[in-house]
View: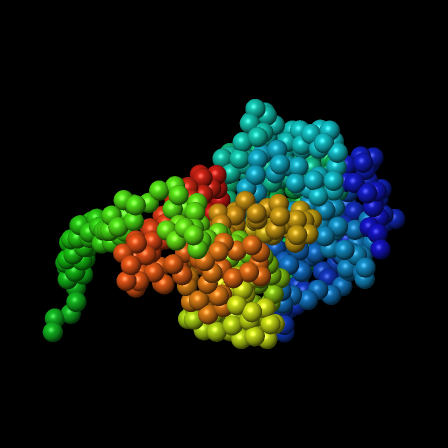
Length: 271
Length: 296
């Protein structure tokens, strides 16, 4: 079974993304994750509109990391987890029978907590996903430059594209990872506490990059930093003990939280 | 007894610090000593074997041999090369695939079983592996006492070392790197060949060279499976001599010339093993600088 935007070759789909009938790029319905008898996530139903930056906040262990990992089927790489419910990507349930998780992950990019550059050159790191899709060399070159520009790294690395990526600084490495995820032109970018290992200056750069990207694609940012959610996102979802407590425009959620739990968390009373 | 106060604690800490300082200093003296303990036997061996072997060793020693030229090592060198090429090819294939499968694809439970089996094989006395080879390849397969029977038997002796290196190397790749590769839509094979390869190569090469160094010096697996011959082997199914056999057979000979030949074979083996170890070091150095920063 094919994913909705299966146009063979990530780059050729440069037209604006087709949106599913109800206007969301990504949506979950009754999503649950269990590890044996223990429920990690229960009945999550949430929509992610196109061109938005949604922050997911909540105390440690509330399941926010597990949640983003279910959105591109990364949960399957850690044994012992079982997923129930549905995740719709452009209207297609990615957990449906016959959907290849590898292809799902090529459409829905992910950036992790720590920079995870591969032991190859800066250029090859960004080109990684394009090489997997066997893109022609000229396309690869073009896309590498475009992605590095979009992640705000081009000016710093344009003269040393053939140097080992491991020689970059931590902040540069993380922006390289974002560039790598962007190179295949995903419509959705998942970030799992992507700035938590960076210094304030690098964090600011990454946030600026994300803010700009959110005018084009859907970004879901897991963060344990409430302040970051407040300043960088336009929507915020609050998770607590494996449940979605509240989701809404960031301003609204921070100024007039509907739930008592949300209010207690964002005002720093626990978490 | 008086209660333990802060002053006692501070005193204990000072005493420990003083002891610790002394310990560091003694270790500082100990290390050069240990280095000498390690290097002296090697130099002694090189000197002692060299003194016996080198005076009569010429290019002809390495390139001639056989019934008409009994003072040459060529048949033994050719036999060792034949056996090692076949054994290494088999051991690398088996060990590499086994190690990758164990580290990347098997469940924790099955992997534990495979590792235990491999470790048992690594701990098995070589002569027992030799007997297994004799029973299976020489008798049951009916190959006879030919070179390939010895090579395949030696491969069983070498495989656990390659296996262990491959298994450890792939298991030691940071989990985050693996996740990132899969998260970018890489299939496991893409991860193995594109992302993990530069990380695991030095460790695996190390294991391969270790296996080669051990296999080349191993006598027990070939002595019971290969019929010695004065002639250089002509193919996998011919009889063969090999360097360790020359040492084993000629060292006790009444003829001084034969004993010298044994020393020459021993010196040659020693040099080969030393060169292999130097190659291992160079490979490790070269990769160390390239991978700096990955394991922080």
